[in-house]
Image (cartoon, rainbow, N blue to C red; front, side, top):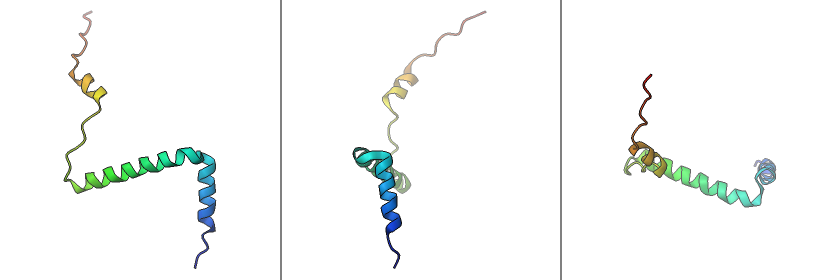
Length: 68
């Protein structure tokens, strides 16, 4: 059986790089990404609505071009 020392080293490096407070946020984001990927692959769910900023930009009239 393989000794899990390499997992312990990886865990220590991750704790040093990201700190204890940032790891739950990273795992939450990873979980949401995996969940979204699975929903997208199943094809049963409608695509998500675009962000509000891009909707307002799409409804604005383009600026008039200057005539030379």
